Amino acid sequence: MLSILRKLINRPVDQQKFADTVLNALQRAWPTSTFTLDREKFQIQQSGGGLIYLQNIFLDYSRAEPKLRREQLDRFVQGVVTPNTQDVGYEDVKEQLLPVLRNLSGMDLVRIEGGDDKPLTFVMEFRPLSDELGMALAIDSELSITQIGSDAMTRWGKSFEQLLAVAIDNLRHKAAPSFHQVSPGLFSSHYGDYYDAPRMLVQELIWQLPIGSNPVVMVPNRVCLLVCSADDPVALGDLVEQARSILLEESRPLSDEMFKLTDGSWTAWHPAGEPGKKLRRLQREFLVSGYAEQKQALEGLHEKSGIDVFVASQVLVERKEDGQLISYAVLTNGVHTWLPKADLVFLLEEVDAEPLVVSMSDFLECVGATAKLLPYVLPRYEVIDFPNEDCMSWLKERATSLAMVSA
Image 1: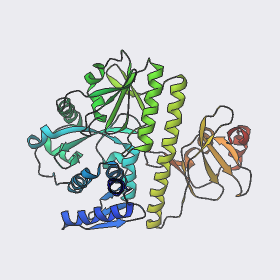
Image 2: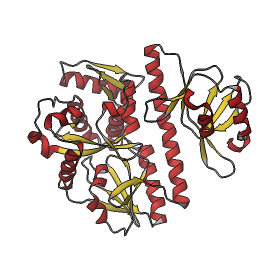
Image 3: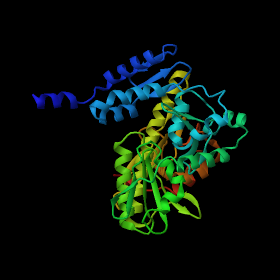
């Protein structure tokens, strides 16, 4: 009997039933709002244009202990509809200000799916830590995290930098240091309050760990801050492997980058040797996944808008000679294409012809301004016209053998 009960309690959560449960809970909690479920995209459209992505909460719900699932779902539902902060004064919320880290391509995806054609810098108030990771500000309440925009800063008469200093200080005093050793020389945060990742901004926490000089960090999701020394190759390898498992298996992936603390500032950094090879491989796998999500969002937007353009994929192949992953995209003569950034471009003068394989840097140098850079975090180029005869002649002189890049 006990074994039957355990099977019933621990059976996998049905994704579609979960979506229906969330939809019904939202409608009960917010009767004045309208919610529409898109089963194919596994998201809910909120009245006013907001999108509620279900994948992350579904993963969290599925992995939670059954007795905690209802509480988790209730907290999610209560925090979904962003409270109105238009009339909130600075003095009312200054102690609730906290820093948050945002995956910029993920935020860009929200903008694309919402149909906003303005660049992310016009839509969201943030400061970049790198090309892919940004610092933002939020009001943390019991049930929700509300990101602060430029309108609030203007009303309060405060700059982003002033508010960020307050937010970091609030985070500094939010909880006592909580790290555990994952393996020799590698430490992971264990705060349990969803603010582990931005604690990289509280630099004294990093220096307190017994790792020696030259600290490096990775923040694979918002509940994990991984720390080791740039001078410890074994710990660096473990760091990448730990980040990989979190990025590919857990919810809310944040960043695949490694940051090194130098002269009081974090900068994206790449280790040498085997850890560097592992990191490059992880970053290429994560990037191709990001481009696939961007492609899907753009195709959905184009379908709604009646735009006839081919959104090309970024594809990975493993080079035979050294096992290195290289990326390519395909451009076909006569096809209006939005081309992702990649290592190589496969140029097809005819659909069934052998492709001319060239580096993207050579391709962009040759076509010049006719490849228009589009306003997305993950770069894409709009290419309407195929390279002309002179350009193709020059590219053929610099072409790469297809056999060198084939898997």
